[in-house]
Image 1 (spheres, rainbow, N blue to C red):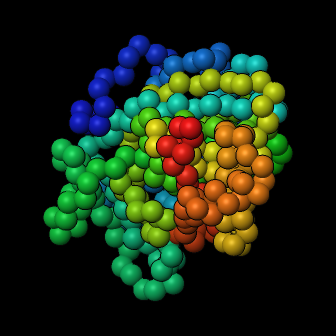
Image 2 (cartoon, one colour; image 1 turned 135 degrees about the horizontal axis):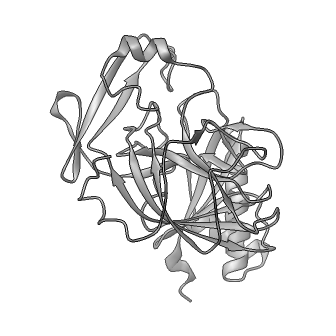
Length: 309
């Protein structure tokens, strides 16, 4: 893969996980492609979310080869030695290196406006310095992020296009270089997988971000006996808590409850104090709105500067 040098420097010496084996579901019965002992430094190759089917810009061939359930490939699963249910896996995203070209496919029935007629096309977006160049020569600021990141659920297989307590297709722009994603381990070995990198994606992903091949540098750490209910994310400037449900209001409630619990842990606060602080400083935002037949997601975001007391 041709890496784009403006995104990050060359990966340092670390274990490489190739994208020749991917999964289309997070599954506690999945056979791992590798096992690592935490703390572990990895470089993970990721295929674009279209599984490289757009490279030829042949929309007819793309539409003909689409198979339900084989979308959003994630590299893995990667077993984490010693990880057991009730532990927390900490995923440090250290660098993202993008391929030279990404794609957005406009296909009938896809996205928030999928019910409105649109021609089936493949739109290329070329990485050019700190921008991507799309239709009409429009330049969008480069904003690389990881869309799908998660571990196996406790039972059953969950498609990588979906999301839930295990993580999955979170599609939150804050999952980028410098963040830490905290994931609740629900199956032995965690069975971590990652993919669906975007060169740029609008918040909420009303249709699709710019899907692109990438290399992701990671550091995996494990805390034993630290159970989580939902994934949460940490950046230099913010903490984010997530919520997923078929109903947007309930997803927002889950995200707020997670934030109040985090505030009580960090400061610490009484429940009434956390409620007041959340109302004063927390933003609630829509997560995944594309209407891909997956639950609605939301997240709460709060400034880390409030913890500097």
